[in-house]
Length: 370
Image (cartoon, rainbow, N blue to C red; front, side, top):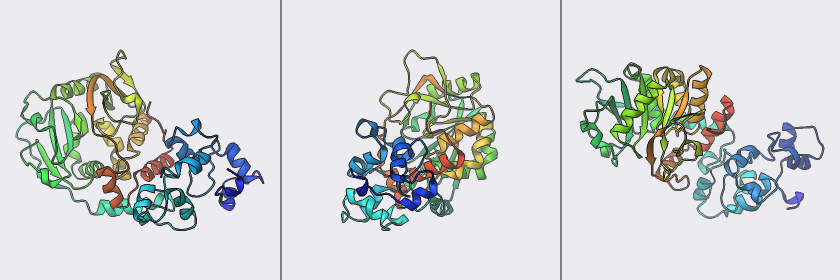
């Protein structure tokens, strides 16, 4: 591709780096290593991280995007949700032409394009302001057990058989995000909050902190995780035995997860220390919850919170790890293009990847779990 045909914002680039008059040449030589961008709507480091296949086909992430990624409707930046942009323009703009149209000024949050990372904050606040946490059962009929499972669930929960098992070493708090599945008899505690798991965590911490902090460890579990009562009992015994502040079960080989280090590793030690865990099933100690509590409202979708929690816990010397001897299955596919969860986020003008990159930038987070 000739330089003359490459979209490049000279003024924007020079505001980042004024050291070389041959700006576009300097960008292709050092832009990735120096974290420089050719336009406000292509983020070099982010694109390279999100698209690890680029080196197999091209010498530079930007060339990969212009020749491959744009045709496949990949996002050029965390500011751009290309799936929303194409849906909102109803097929009138071809994927390969969308990036240039955005650069030409055809952009707005309703089209899936933010001007800056902090633009998402207004939509986060609007979403959070509409959420109401409704309590339905908050009084125990017996002394509290040592541990707590907080299950975010809807009509399709696979866990109701748990509650009839009296051998649990943990109490059960149910938060319904789908009123159609509501059952006031399922769980020691019952709440309803038609938001996300993370707005539920935020509201529970804000309004029922004393309820949560009476437990030594809390597991915040998604309702598509398959795991037995016996495994959860061993999970809590192990996190206490190893003095873990942030932990998770290992994922089965057929699970869906973007972090390879979180899967079960045959023959590996029972405990593998890491820098963070997944948000689908984190176990937090009391002091870990107190450390992350003030930051629970930073992401509506949950994107980026795993990396942030890991950093916050590590800063006070907390121990983080994966329990390789306890296996759970996350069998639901991650469908960022057409999945119901991502459609829900788009309908509320929230781009999870913007939330992720904003947290990485704001808190200087590692971009990997390992």
